[in-house]
Amino acid sequence: MKSETTEKKPSPQIEFRIERYKPGLIDPPRFQSFRVAVDDQMSVLDGLEQIRLRQDAGLMYRHSCHHSACGTCACRINGIERLACTTLILSLNTETVVLEPLHGFPRLGDLAVEMTPFYRDIDPAWSLLTPAESIEGAAEPAADPPLRLEACIECGCCVSSCPAAHRNAEFMGPAALAALHRQMAKVDSPRQRDLLAAAASPRGERLCERALNCSRVCPTDVYPARHIADLRRLVKA
Amino acid sequence: MEHILIIGGGVGGALAHDLTLRGYRVTLVERGELLSGTTGRHHGLLHSGGRYVFHDAETARECYEENRILRHIASEAIEPNGGLFIALNEEDISHQDRFLEGCNAAGIPTAPLSPRQAMSREPALNPALLAAVGVPDAVMDAWRLAMAFFATARANGAAIRTFCEVTDLKMLGRQVAGVRVIDHRSGLSETIGADLVVNAAGPWSGRIAAMAGIGVPIQPGPGVMVAVRGRVTQAVVNRLHPAGEGDIIVPQRRLSVLGTTAWLADDPDQVTAPAEHVARLFSLCAELVPAVAAMAPHAVWSASRPLLQSSQDQDPFAISRTFDCFDHAARDGIEGLVTLIGGKATTMRAMAEQTADLIGRKTGRDIACHTRETILLPYRRYWRGDMGN
Image 1 (cartoon, each protein chain N blue to C red):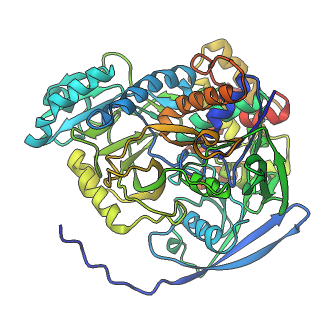
Image 2 (tube, rainbow over the protein chains, first blue to last red):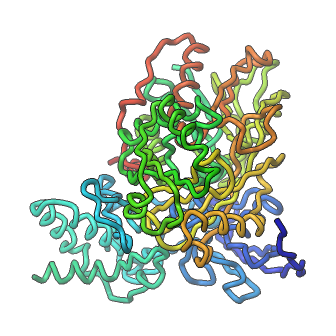
Image 3 (cartoon, one colour):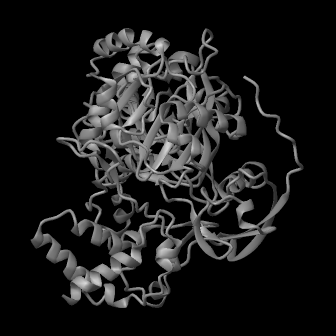
């Protein structure tokens, strides 16, 4: 098979400005710059991998699936919450990529944060599965309709971007409210009432300030603000 | 009970779960985030075993058995939508009888479908398909399924330390007495003593073994995967032929993953995704589902398979995906070290069971395995556990 000839262009050098933090060691946090040779296929996560493997083995960041299924690599990229794995470096159109950990989470070190508070108001038993959207032209299956995993990958982008969550630590936050609303669709009406009561609590939907940042930054199109608006209507009804 | 130290936060999670159920004291160390090496980075196929019936009957049987167990113990992390093997030309058709016999021999149920039936189930398939066979493939969330093992192990007392990299083994003569680690959080080094150390570092296990001055038959086998936006099918789609490049599409959530390529490497870390591999995946997978050809890559990544080294097979697709665990006392005269290598995410529970059985023999304890029937805690409990819930 004849392969296309790829012209070797010189790789542009991009500066990665990373907020470093190691408790008691690099404390308070400060920025450190690294230079990375990049090509048009490289994601921010690929850049982090290169820095860790070639420049600083102690660089801490979370990552696992590398394709927006796990949600671990969320961080603030040039000030906006995004997944490092699906953000192409050159698509940012900057010579400097500024990386900070998610806001409002306890820091583990460097870009890695502790996710425990994220799960405070998400019941571990809430289902991860939901009916899959039907595919155009497909015959309806007689039994066992296809299921898919929930779109929310629990990355924390929405919580980090939410001004109300930063102003009021009691706020359940956009991820938990969206998950709660999704769970309501899967349970019987007494349990729906319990879930709605939680959404209507003083820590619930009333603290949302409708900034809509959550829906803007969500990497998997969950649109948490819509779920919160739906809950608000149900609470008022 | 003995203190077992596990190196590697991949299949090590399943081993930590098994060992804590048997009552051992367990510490697991991982150099980065859990599942950041191989186990979290695959395409998500929960194998029926169908991909292996042509050349690796043992793995095929293991896969189907574990497929059923994982559906039982971790159902929430699995999309149970089946899989299809489709034949697109006369050569594919020529494999069909062997495929059906192989599945039958491995106990994998099959459902032959006419082209019309296959197209009505999955209208995005190549309409030129000549035959299709349904198998019980499924799709797992690579992160959440494996995290359910970690959550359960942690709730049962396992100490799990991330960003904690092994820099050396603590040797007392020819006995491994623990590990030397650097905690990347504090920058400090420390020694963690253990009665037994398990090297479960996957494609990196050769580096750990080298710290004891010995070798293990591991060969990093990287491969490239591409995710596209949009779920092109509900079921997994495989090409009906012996496993090769670009012959599988794994849908998950609202994405579809095109897989895979494979080559043999020396260094599991220096993994890139060559552009020609990406182009090849698009063109080969478009034979299965033509719409793929017009889609843009959403993510491109690679992962290193931990292949068992083999002198005969230089084709990485032909190397067995089975697993093995070695007692280095018997093999190399090094006490206190066990290495677990090979295998795949679908068989991680079985890998853990076999390794824990070996640890039972080494520690003189006869404790039964209970991981087949123990329902795993929801993976979110991994974090909720910190709050005492």
